[in-house]
Length: 254
Image 1 (cartoon, rainbow, N blue to C red):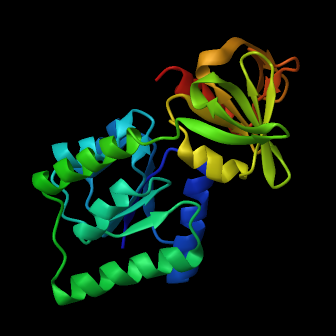
Image 2 (cartoon, rainbow, N blue to C red):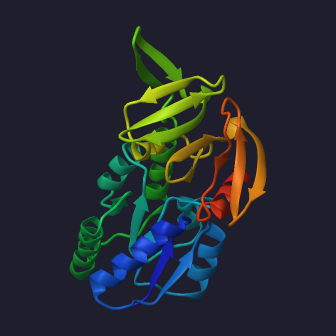
Image 3 (cartoon, helix red, strand yellow):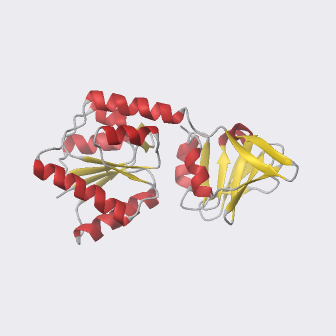
């Protein structure tokens, strides 16, 4: 057995490798690609029993890769996307794991495809299906969060997402700082908020902070492969973690 993993986030890739080893109770040979271009090279030169695929890779969406190359192996999509896209997945009988996924989610997805293959019921992705998925993805993009409802002492105010400079975790809540330096409490945790934001605009630079690319004023190198970021409206500089710095640099160049 051989597996291809298409995943641009290193922690997510490591989690999938761990799930694979636990499920099959052995180390399964696999290739790993973080971009469509790397994935294409692997697919042209290798055959795989199945593919674990994120949707958003470093150089675009993986749907473009599957539209270009005919894939016979079953694909299990692993992504933080939901709503429109996963309605399309369910309609077409495509397995997926929603981030942050668990070992149980992984087991169910693998068992589904093993069952379909044994029964001969698995259908490869067609151009029509890929087109439907792309449309669903675009609809989902159009439905990213546009504003937050903020409860203040004097009543309820609206905070436009486009005005937010940074969002920082604070216990079970988060503090959003706008470009004018005003702070607003959002009654959601950072993980939930992150999934609602446009990924080309917002990046989670460490475990507790998200930044908006439109309000990055300056970036400078720091020790241990970290970066210091000067944000509009923020007095203190934000800092990437050593594990996110590489992905952050690539995100800046999208």
